[in-house]
Each structure stands twice: as C-alpha cells, then as structure tokens.
Length: 177
Image 1: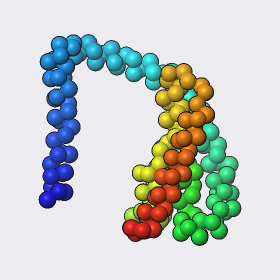
Image 2: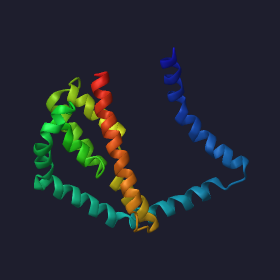
Image 3: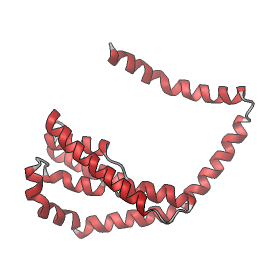
Image 4: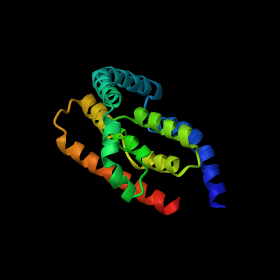
C-alpha cells in the first residue's frame, strides 16, 4: 500500500512542480520568462568561473589513481578492514568518494561488473555511495563559485561526515546483508 502511494507520488511530483512554479510566479506577478533568462545567464557565468577548480580536482584524482596510491593504502589497511568486515575492494571507493563523484561511480561500476549486483561487496559499495558526499568537489565548486578560499573548517567537517557515512555504510551493510 505505502509502496503504491509513493510510486504514484513520484510519478506526478515532477510535472506538478514544473507547472506549479510558473503558476505561483505568475500569481506573485514575477516576469517568469525574463527571470528564467537572467538566472540562466548567471548560471552560465558561474559555470565558466568554476572550470579551473574542476580541472584541478579532476587532475588530482586522476594522478592519485594512476600513481597506485589507492592500491598501496588498501594493502596497508587490509588487516584492519578484515576485522571490521569491510572488503578491501570498497576501500578505493571510500577514498575516492570525497574527491570525485564520477570517479567513485567508476569504481562502483568496476566492483559491480567484477562481482555482480547481488554480491555483498557490491551492495556495500552501493550503500557507501549513498551514505557519503563528494566533499572536495562540493567545496571546490560552491566555494570557488563565490570566491571563498579559506575553507579548512568546512573540509574538516565534510571529512568527518564522510568517515561517519562510510562507517555507517559498513555497519548497515553487515547488519542488513
């Protein structure tokens, strides 16, 4: 019953939002088309201004993966991972996830292709992707777009949240699967 209700709501949610926002704007006497065009112009200029930050983070992630740093860390931490019942295959995902969402999805795709969709390691990797955030990417894009360069406290808070999310992904996966 609940599943059917949620399915129906999700089916109609997007069309209702797409229709409701312009109608509400017209009710408030906001020039909808002109406001949309102004917002699109601002979005384009923000997109252009963050390109250097995106290139920097993508190059850093590529260099880290290509250097073999992830595999080295996985080998060193293997005894600890075994004790907490975390497969070593998901450690690269846990390391890359705060750096790059697309890199994390690439690693997740590799795990799923090698182990299959029903494997424990794939399920843990999926939960890990959902429980963590691309902290450095978010800080780069959002802080870079408004010119904030001193964000050490935000980095620390984001990394603590990532560690908590990864720990919960391991705990929940071991509990549920």
